[in-house]
Amino acid sequence: MIKPNTRCICALFCCLPLYGAAAVELMISAKGEAYLSQTEPNALVNKTWFNRGTGQLDYAEQAIGLGPQYVAIDALTDSAFSARVHAQWHAKPEAGASVTEAWLNWAPLPVAGYRLRGRLGYFYPQLSLENTDTAWTSPYSSTFSAINSWVAEEVRARGGELSISRPGRFFNANHSWTGVVGAFQGNDPAGTILAWRGFALHNLQTGLGERVNFARYPSFQVDPLTLQPAWVEPTRELDHRTGYYVGLHWEHLQQTRVRAYYYDNKGDPLVFRHQQYAWRTRFSSVAIQHVINDDWQLVGQWLQGDTLMGPSVVAADFTAWFLLAHWQHGALNATVRYDDFNVDDKDNIPTDNNSGNGQAMLLALGYSVNDHLNVALEHVRLNSEQQNRQQQWPWPAKQRQSVTKLVLTWRWQ
Image 1: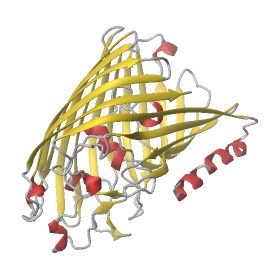
Image 2: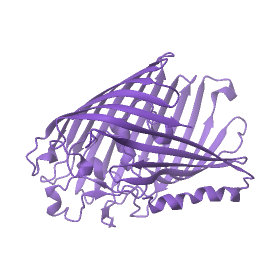
Image 3: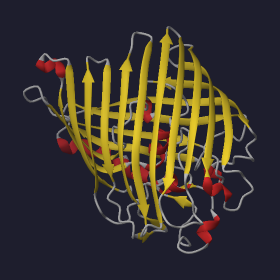
Image 4: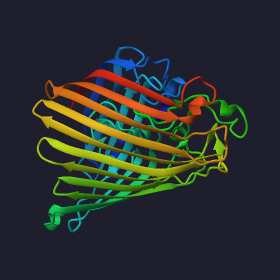
């Protein structure tokens, strides 16, 4: 079933003729995956958050299945305006088709070498150098890092973004710079999953208007959390405040890239509407990519922030980082990634301790059959500690879980 937002956002394409576009050319690309997987220990021990458990590593309930399927549609014109829509089909957390991003681009001709760009709609801030493939997926592995798994779930801007760039080649320089500023609404519940479940590793992007379930913690049954449901709709607008983010991109000789961002959703933590609390969530992020040679490159990211709901009913600081090494030679490719993350509970409710931490290692070995098919063997091991697992369930705070899967990735464009 296609959600209502999917139909509404497609109206972006209808708007293009209003901006003087004489012709519209559609370009379509797609990507998807199928898998054969094995989980250790069995799924019942570490039941995942979207199945009302407290496990933080996505696993397949069936040994064979389909992963997310994505399509990216670009509407190009002979004017300064264009549009893009990213859509998906996935079986979890809610089965069906949905839109993950949709925006109208504005890109006039450069002025004295400087480039001005704008976009309006729903989109991710451009803070990731890991998720750079079709429809905000990763070219390095099926499973995203902990940082970008969370961004895929809870961080989305509904608003506008403006950037100005100083490309190095126009100024006979080795350095290129871009400044970015964005203003948005519709991301008030961001921080909900991070506070109660903590970070997780997966490739599940939340569609616009989609609901993400998590465990029904016993602390929700008593004051002051009795109104909190065991789910979140991350793209809800609740307090009608406007959040913002600012970013700075730097590139050296197309070899080294750095993106630094500060994000503040300006949520009013005292607002409760549509069965959802607004959260005041802020974070800083720095991402780096460095090409060592024709075969090797490094990608890393660091994230630090805090989130608050109510009059300090739930308050938490969070940090995470990862380092990824990718090798590709001919048809062969390999990726190694290490993740580290931590959530530190800062509120004064002893029955709702949400502190947690984890470390994960990913190893992926792949072979490109042709331009359209890639086969990879991927193994992810996660060691995590989450204090709220002990509220009622006979599960230890510390858990170890691993997923091994053979992934067939297809792409078309």
